[in-house]
Image 1 (cartoon, one colour):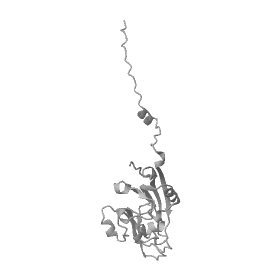
Image 2: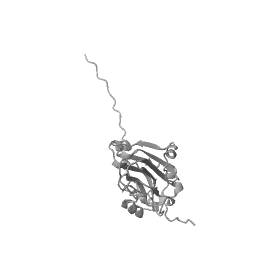
Image 3: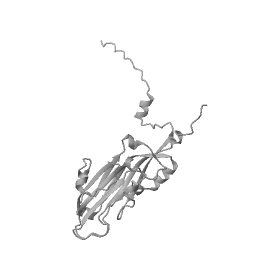
Image 4: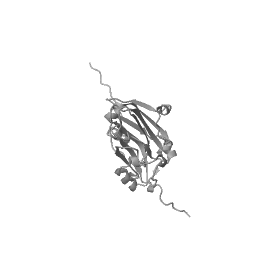
Length: 237
């Protein structure tokens, strides 16, 4: 004779709204939607000759292309210093100009740069050096000076190296401080700079600016409406 089946107890399920929202990928909204706007601003740089703007204004200087035609065996030296800042005139784009007119302050979370190398540059130069420094906007033109910094990165150029992607995330407290939109240019002591150096010898005759580096720049900006936080103070007297 079969025994009596055991009685099973059913456990009451506790409904957790937060857990259910995560499982269903429910959208979570901030308390104040108008406080900030995330925007990716992009620009393309195809520089011919010297970069406009001297090193004294804390923006950019140097060259990303050979100046004038080169004969066979002539030395090639491309050296540039670029301020990694949304206020840099070289990185200007209409999207950023529109947003900084709508919002009082912004800050840049990260910047991605695609470096594109022309065929003549890949044939004539073997390496390209990249270095990020803070507060130093001097262009480096000597390889020994560049590699003496342990943070310098060296990449081998060749037919398969047509593009390099440089990524820099602003993670320190000093970089996360919002930059006033009323500021017209970066402050040198508070700015990160990307140094680029590429040297070699021309393999055959090279035309004007045919050995060059082109760049596509993407800046991840967070625009903030600080009027919510910095309104007129209320006197209690």
